[in-house]
Image (cartoon, rainbow, N blue to C red; front, side, top):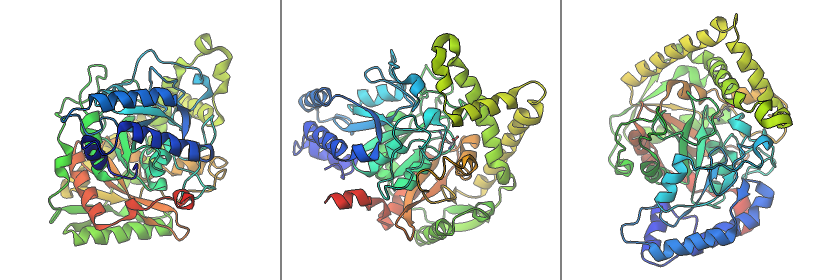
Length: 473
Ligand code: GLN
């Protein structure tokens, strides 16, 4: 059943053909069957508690209950929850229980969602492979020897293997998009401020975003309707009204203009990924869109700008885990996080801040202008998600620079604050998933859904099930 869309599940629940209890049982049986191998969860809720919640939902369901009412879901362990511990993937917070829920958790619970557990992640969001977790490294369900992508790798696996119908990720420089692409699901990085960050464990506060991960663009649009909106607890959350995003799931993109930044297809891009993205263009052309070449001259500095800013902010945010409050535990920062704290502190220190941090901020402004100019002449930009295919577990963690380069196409979007949708677009010769990224103007999530939805009407990549599920049958 969990292979069905959110809308289908909701209709079946309304007709009483299935119950929430059935769905929660299926979730747990998938987790029991697969997660010992995949490690997509750090913490799973007690099954009896979840079943009790489901019984309550079945009893209280009304004809106008929201679309996710009674549906199980998972969330990246980067969001604080009252009922379950929150680790951010780090042993430092191994026993941390928050006294409150993140706003996104509250919103989904109010809409009737049933939280099942907390997903694996690179600690503090530091990584692009999910190998930088203090828990078991999750495995890619398409090839068990390979990484899931990161840092929201656990959430991508939970959705890809149909453990839960959807999950919530976090994206500072690509963490929703990268694992969505590597595990063959759809994921959305929202416009900065579209969804409240209250209760999200901060990585880099000017870049962090909260977004949905699901099996299709249609599902994402329903989720954003529930998650988005202003929050008094997050001063950076936008007051722009929340749109009915699902109304964009129709119409046509005839005459719309897609920009291809020429800098995106240069050195470092895996040829199979390049080919897949260029093939996807044909689908959009068939749908009536026009393709033009654009240029983002400062894009080549994107990774450096991103890391100077992200690491400066993370060194400041992680300063709260000091030895007064955390004692020896502070020594438990991973090598990767320690390196990031040191680099960030260096970039902010007197004598270097002008040369490093401030310069990066100036270049960030130039990048924002370049993206804005490009998006004046086209409706969306099309791009690869990551430069490489999912690597073998162990490869990336031993090559930190490669890890950083994975953010080539995603990190600049966070610097700019724009929204970006990732959808499955094909497979490599070794049957590894390849995604496609569509970037839009700020607050144009609806338009991105339209492009993505129409693409998914023409293709069936997003419906393909991972190898591990096929082997189960
Ligand atoms: N890979 C990027 C980094 O390590 C992005 C992480 C994220 O989006 N949380 O900074």
